[in-house]
Length: 372
Image 1 (spheres, rainbow, N blue to C red):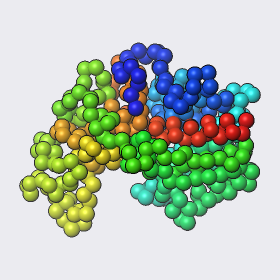
Image 2: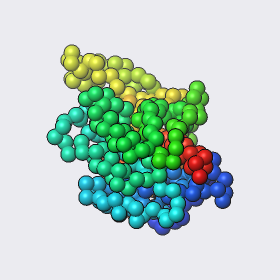
Image 3: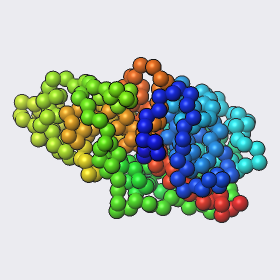
């Protein structure tokens, strides 16, 4: 989604113009929002676009502070959720307004790539549930990876839902497919909504059968060489490729795999039997399809199907942000700060996609109107 002005803002303290799509002027939702595990602010920003008042974001990662505060005009509180008290959260909410608590416990513990019980992150969803039980917000939104439903008979999620129902919340959840909500990315996420005010509904698809594409989101950005940067936007920069990867991407086809390469370019790991099945790396995206899921490593050609559809390079940082649904003027680092691919890539890849967040906010807004 692009700003109405279509420009990248540079000022470190500029006030951002927010498109409150679907919310009439003077009809802001009568609620305030606190975001736990807020990251760079993707979930909060979706709610802000729909007119909600963001009153605070909480995360343990100090690198999130600038992006969250600058784009959401709300304070960032650096805290470990394990030490967070209910009174601290309650103190952020606007008195006399419905209280909306949103959060996305880091999904790495529930990923199929990381299922170790000894990982302390396993406790984050439980701790989030304990906070909800003590804060008792009017409405709750929780977003996570779909595999949370399948892990060990779904026990972490089942315990979370039971805690909500024991606290007399109406609870609904489902796995939502990003492209059905305007996201140009094949990302599916588990979304849960809960309310003490009455039954609440999940978002309804707005783009089913008319998905946005890579071209829609990044097709008009200035071209770049690998290792290059756009003079007008410090985040529209691409990582440098090795000499062999320059040759590899030149042989790569949109939607194809490393099997399209000349034999001498194929990596040794793909020549052995155990590596032949890994075809979702070293690939180009397709212009007229949604992108693959944007990870924290999307800026690396060899990390997935993150090659630009026609330019011989991987995605730029700005392109990854746009495919995550962030507005074009979203700021991730302070003006003049050195751009580190890993730092910014983590902020972007870990974020809740803004367009999915906005769809969730629409549902919460409709629910509040019906129950107030």
